Image (cartoon, rainbow, N blue to C red; front, side, top):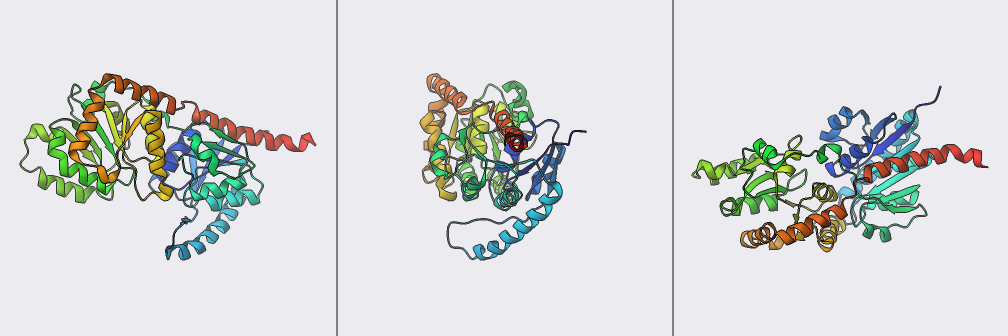
Length: 379
């Protein structure tokens, strides 16, 4: 009887790490998958797709002084021993790491057991966990070509794109999608995303200029779960005297799960932070984008991501300090009213998004397993 193939998945526990893991897991048929790390609110999503979970303590590697570094120093070594123990009982044929807090300990434990590792980096500037993990990996796959020079590794490096979940790719007419939000499909619609945690500066900007924005556009807005109640109270105070027709042009929610596909399909333009997950989902949906990089992101990677997209032609970058209602409205109208520019941005998005990224990564993982099994026979 042929032994079952086992593959370990690991990542930082945010949507930017978990969603690409899910996209690759969807392509790995007939194998046993287990996620090692902190899955948080995404645990149920993993389980629903047949991915078992095994919790490993998470620790963050900071490149700046913080007293939390002393605490996480000990947490890191605890997580290494946790990983060694838990991986021993699962003993995968290969591991796939998306980087992020908690992933490095798992990769090092895999290295100890001589388990082949594939690392995927989504950002143009790699995170510290992936830069270190790259030294112990057997293959490094990248979303951005610009990240290649950041890795010091003997492992082969290849630009394959960013894996995107199949559900995001569902096709739906703007008319059908607009019904989900009770919107007029003939009116220009903007989708505003601040990442899975939301963005306080973006939320404040929307609230400050909301009346002026709604006179021009319909808005779908992901506020963030932690910020939702405070945002809701402020919005209700501001909009208490607004007409029903004006309020109907605005839909906000703490987080879009099943509605994210309709949110993309109903929108004409997406305003977003410049995390790689959002960038490539937007490109996969062939939407022009206005990117507002988070200025405090590690290594300023969101800013580099954003300008890589602007250089390619799929997005326009507005720095957070320049986020003003009049400028914003002017930029949005210049895109939506200029069919030539709109067409160029959509064409650029097609080039950024590589539809076979998840398939390619899944194939690379299986190739590592085959190489491992064939190695003894080649001597």
